[in-house]
Length: 267
Image 1 (cartoon, one colour):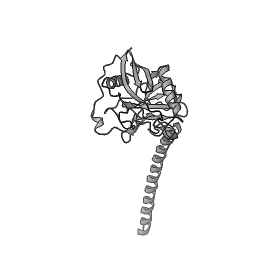
Image 2: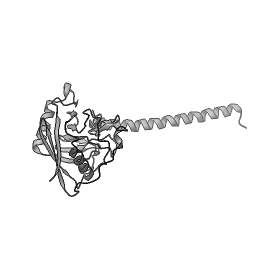
Image 3: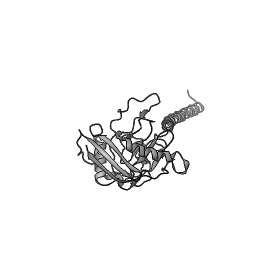
Image 4: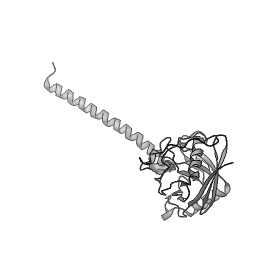
């Protein structure tokens, strides 16, 4: 027969075991979370100093509404669009999905032009044409430059602080275009690549994008959708050469870049 004292000890043991199980589960969750964060920081752009935006390279529409470039990735500065912004629907697909399009950015530092293949990234190209036709990008600043670990200039935020977006998100596309990720979980985004910033979560692209001016290692989670021409790449590299404000390695470019006019045309 079990005495009351033995019963109390048994209940105490069971309570202790439950507590240990909960603690172990919390430790496992924290470990998984920290592993993800560490990996992002190691790439120095997985979310880096904003992608959403981002690099980036989360469109800097992440946590506060930023696309990822948070921490070390091309993302926006806001992880998720605000409630008011998320009400707009993605524009109806209207581009020729068999065609190539050109996006021309007339900036105060020179023209930056890149080609986009609608066959590979139809919804991304469609969104950019839709926004450019509405003059969405006109007068916007390239708000983020990274000069260590990852080498990108991030643009496309009408707010200029990494937290802006169009009010809708578009799905990831063409993620295997740059090959299979290596042991460190990254692929090489070659200089001249244009890719979507995001919030570090799948299918969270908005309007923020990043221009790669030097080969950069990143996780294959950012839609590569454009290729900059030689003249445009030189413009971006000159901006990068001047560095980041205050001598930092991630932040507003010392040489301010404003997109005065953006147009998308079918080739």
